[in-house]
Length: 359
Image (tube, rainbow, N blue to C red):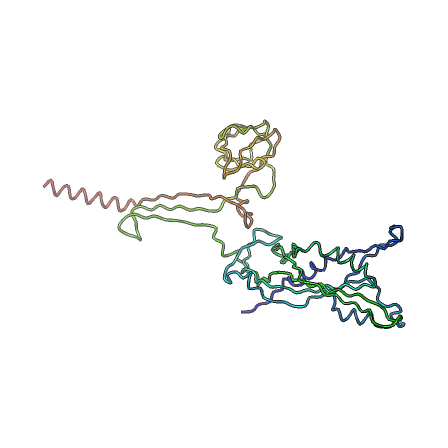
């Protein structure tokens, strides 16, 4: 049942949450409201107790200076299943590798989980605390949405709502004048993330050819008539990016079937498809460097094209480069066969029967 996989989803969500508070700073002003200093608030990952112990620890030879304030820390505190976002457990979806969109991968739908976070702010001055809090809270109403790259191998990105749950305040003001004062605010958040299971390679399971056969006659193993139709996926655009030739005249958008002129039609075959900009065309015939085409193939938009526009051919190699999620067409072929042996037997039977009747 279990197999090894590690998508780093929890880690990526933790990093994304911490990045929200990377660029917070405070300013100090004088009596004339001139800025005297700008301090970027440091951010670190760790439990609140660790920073409180560090703040209360006396300086020594190894750490000659106490921890400086202001400072922020955040911590991943809990992980809970979210029943409100549950989907069908057996439902799957297909995706392609980020490096190769032609390699399909299958995965079950992700499992919704809520990640609990605590962001702790430490300051010495009340005004510093108010500056930091006011730079955070307006963005949560009560949620702020993060776009997180959950699985990089298949390029799976999800919008993760980060919900603000509440805030608690603590002011250690009791003590003598030698005791250091510290304001501590703790903000609680919930990130609604998703966990994915193993990603399976289903390249061999994709159906790339379908054949349908019809038979006629009184024998299945030796029918008198046999009709087969075979279809295969066909690319509707050029994936290689290779330019075959260029237009030598402008094209308007008034006609569906027209003659177009190209610089060199040597590499363009009849009964094939070409693309000009975003429009696909079917080549019916050619005379010299003039092509007779049917425009707007596969529901592409008929549009005007200027002289010099790139003309690209769609070949069989493009069929193997169709990416996951792309639209594609179908190419079909017919095969008709008649079993002459059965027909000859019937003709001989009719001839013998007619002779018997004449007698």
